[in-house]
Image 1 (cartoon, rainbow, N blue to C red):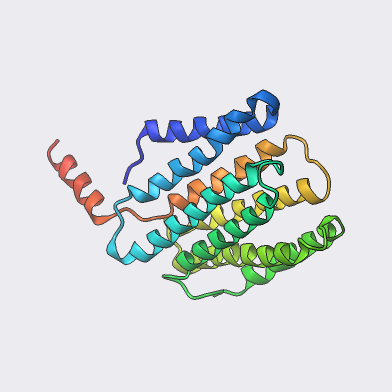
Image 2: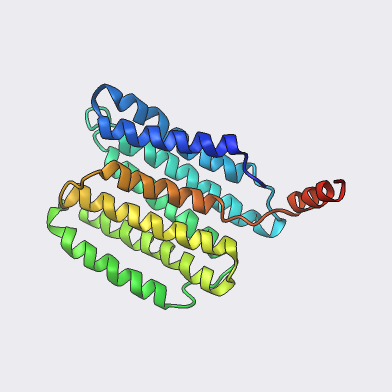
Length: 236
């Protein structure tokens, strides 16, 4: 289904306000609190309104579930510790569930880890990053962070493997979305556990929302949308 320019502009403005509010902080943080979850909801609406072929119904449902858990993770992670002491842990759990949903979507029409090289390559990179970050991760957080890394790598690798297998424009969008998600969370981890990054909000949120948007646009056009397009073109 074609996406209206108004919808795309609204997503872009929400993302910009989320980044601006996080960067400025202080009294402007309310922009971040409002715009961050709003941007995710607007991206999820792309999937909700999409005219999806019946063969991709399971993919769409899993994608929506992943975006829903991502929205929940957005809310939990952005709250200060004074409001929610376990916000980071709960947010991490929400995003882990989101990646499991995305992984389920990406295995609906493609075999798991075929080809195998994306999984091995990304796992090597993930382990190298984890080795650098490990001293800065508290003992209590190490098991959940390790589990999250493995789940994120599995999702991203499957997105690439699926794109190699299907070789369609839609699967390529999902693969790029998976890689951007991996990049976003890697930047977030370095910013939290290693050293503060310059322009961290722009880097982390920019890649994060690009990843969600590409995953949302990875659904193929439905038969209804295609028929509507043919009808309108034949009437002109």
